[in-house]
Each structure stands twice: as C-alpha cells, then as structure tokens.
Amino acid sequence: MTEDERTSGTAGADLLCVSPHTDDAEIACGGTLARFSSRGRRVWLLDLTRGELGSNGTPDERWEEAARASAALGITGRLQAALPDGFVSAERPEQVAAVAAVIRSLRPRWLLAAPVPRRHPDHQAIPSLVRKAAFMARLASWPAALPEMRAWPPQAAAIPPPTASWICEAVLTVCAPGERPNLYVDVTASWPAKLAALRCYATQLERAAGARPTVINEPAFLDQVERWSRAWGFQAGVPLAEAFATEQAPLLEDLPAERWV
Figure 1 (cartoon, rainbow, N blue to C red):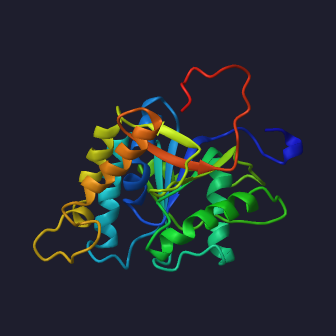
Figure 2: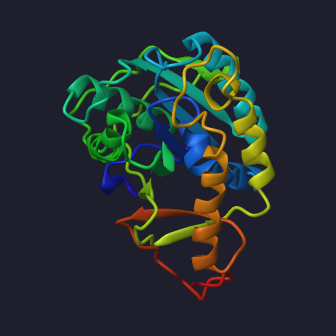
Figure 3: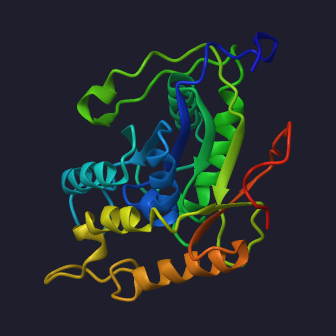
C-alpha cells in the first residue's frame, strides 16, 4: 500500500480476527487461524466483550480458557476489550472507534469478522461493525484511541500506538451454511488444533452438573461444527474446509500454485 492511499508504515499483522466473545472465533474459523499460524503468519484475535452476560462461566474463567485456546491455536496474540456484552453495534461511534484503533495499531493485511451472523444480536452486528471500522480506520481525520483491553500473552499488551490511518487489503466474513463463499481454506491438517482449542472452553461447551443448557453445550454441537466443515470441504474438494466471503479480489501475477474450485 502506498502513501497516496494514506496508510502509515508496514503491516504489523497478517490477519486480525474480530469476534464478540471468547470461543466465537475458534468455533467459526479456528482451523483457519491454526493453519495460518502454523505457516508462520502473524495471527491476532480481538474479542470485543468479556462475556459478562454468558449463561455459564465468569468473565475471568472465560479469559483463562481463551488464553489456553490461543496457545493451542498457536496464534501471535489475543486482545479482549470491554464493550457491553449483548449490545455490540455498528451504530455506536465509540465501538467503531475501539475496533478502528486496534486496526490502526496492529495494521493487519486481512481483517476477518467472526462468527456466523445468526441468532445472537452481537453475532449479527459483527460484519457491519468490522466493515465500518475498517473504513473509518482509513480516515486520518477521524481520531480513535485504544480501548481498555486484556492481552495474551501479557507482552501483547505492548502493541504499538495507533497510526494515523490504515487500509486493510481484504475484509472477510465467515459464511453461514447455505451461503455461496468466494474463498475456502483447507483446514484438514489444522483440525486437531481447532478441536484442542475448543476443548479449552469447558464452561461453554461442556454441560457439567449445574450448567445452564445452551445451544453450544448441547452434546451434538461439535458434531454440527464438523458437519459444516465437511460440507464446505466437499465443495472445495478437500476433507475439511472453512468458508468466507469478501468483496475484494486478488491481483495475480501468475497462475497460483493452489488449485481453484
């Protein structure tokens, strides 16, 4: 990216995945995060809330689980803001500014909105919030300060201050079943890392004695997650895949090494 595009400096991260709660990114695209991380890519996660309205587990318990899951995925770093759980919104300027500031600080090449925008109002808000924050991060005349955040590992708290502006190369969203993706990632080899990360979320994915029943602690939930990836994999011609949509298109200099489907 060039100075006349109003970017500042070079990319500080290859991929930043934004989600409302811990465990959302792992469920939606943990295989992709693990695959890119295993290739030496700088992968970061940003959880927007602390999950204080969750049916099970305290915010502190969930953060401890997120730290273990982050290690299982092999990612570079994870940040957790303190936006209000249940009220994530692209219509709140302070929330857009919080995400835009992290974008300007981490300077990712790719920006990813997770999870699938269904059912939960925070999930429904994520794609529009991420797209809006990506656009506003471009505008040098729009100020945005970093929000209060937890960090994993602890040294990840020392991220650089936000640049004046930043333009991401691509903004992606996780595809819901039935949608038409324009990008697949083969997660066959990284599936064990995804499962290891998911197993870290005992308060959310296990229906232990005294736990409130939820959609994601249903015994069949993880089987459903695998069926989604097997269905995407069937379309992509691999055993397991995760699927994404983006408005950007790659600029090619030659035929790519990867096979297209």
